[in-house]
Image (cartoon, rainbow, N blue to C red; front, side, top):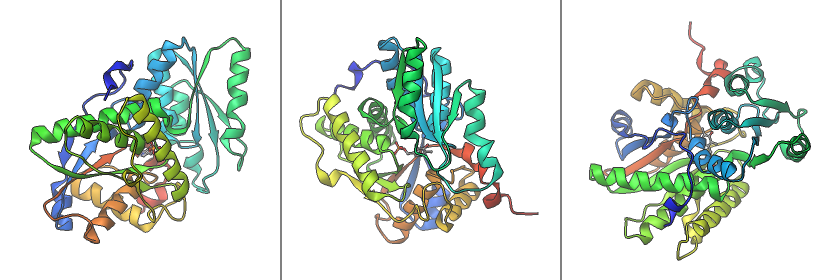
Length: 338
Ligand SMILES: *Cc1c(COP(=O)(O)O)cnc(C)c1O
């Protein structure tokens, strides 16, 4: 795959570690679970968007942009990493945030990622409650252009073909690291929403298989409680990214594997499986997951293990996509002791 022909603006600490979760594996009675620490990408508390932004920022700089505009929910990890990337690249940053998650904790409106967006120097535009950000973003881009800026729009989650290159690179990293460790990876499990993470991974894994490396499936856990939409997102990015990478074959339909059932009652809203997963990983491994993405994805992995989805001695890689700053806007879930 032609990954190395694309310019990359270095933002992340790479490669991120691939580590065993031995106490979790013992607790569940197998398989051998490993964590790919993309929570440790290093940029302003890290997370999965940093890999995508390495390619997106390089593209923005190649187009002589002066400003990054992006969008997300009020507690978006993506926009926080975009604000940090813009700062590091010397670009201005404007963020369009909508307010569509019915979570009433007052910290949700003042702390966590939202506080960090402002600290990182981004200009924040809040949409009226209930209004989708897509109603506002084009006007923000146009207003910036009218002021003489050269805006570069980064879509929700940084999830397009260029952002996906970051996770094609992650696929290559995982296969290189597992080869060094003498591991055969049976599956990669990751949270999936706007689709750039899983889509880029799928394209990268197909590219590696074309180069003679082992074929590894990437299983996404739907964290949006919207299976059709997530499937569409992942399929689009996987195909567009495979096109950019110059892969011989397209993406077969069976490569798009997304598991529903772990996100209810909705995006950003808690459920028991997520709380169990976050507490378990904190107490067995000292590892902090987040309530919106990685906690629900880990709940999905734990449930699949309990249902016998994996062989006992199989190696399964969970990608920790970050997001822990959002723990602080859900204090009522976790800070309930005396
Ligand atoms: C954005 C995000 C995801 C989902 O990644 P997509 O590329 O949008 O599918 C998963 N985990 C965390 C912590 C995120 O911020």
